[in-house]
Length: 205
Image (tube, rainbow, N blue to C red; front, side, top):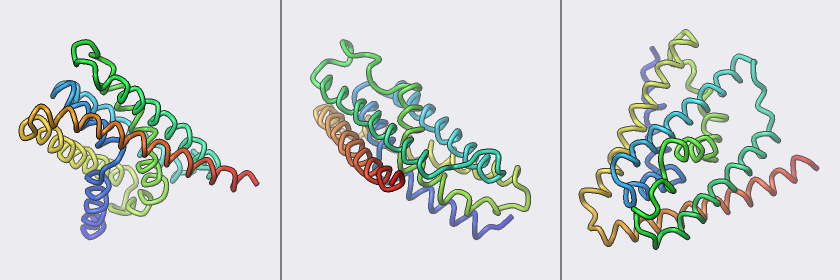
């Protein structure tokens, strides 16, 4: 096993996961409004999405799937619009009590959809992930190793965020955090949509 490459991969995904983005914003907002159970269900959803993106990257490496730049921009545009819609709905419902608004934020499905449409993760798995595939001499063992490390780091970091919100943040600040998280999601969605739209025009022309 290439230990130096594995350590580089660990550092790369740690920085990727810990940096605020759509997944972190959704998980923290869900923890603030819905509590532990739904927040962890959201984490399972986002983690599953990451494994799907990893599988697509692996298929591209083997030549079974072609990652066309135009298709990536289209996926990024659709994903950004989806993130924006989720954020807008979250902002509109932020004044409604958790009981009245149960089930409208977070959870496995929403976590999966945000994760699989996350421009940051799409870029990582399309461009950077293949650089770490030589961590072992065999493709299958490399994929298993990289997937296990990703799952471990992802759950550890997001669990830290959830516990931080629920244990150490007063209830009034949790409500503000929820709204701030949705505003962050909305800005990410709008910025991603604009970025991918203009790059799509460049590719088309």
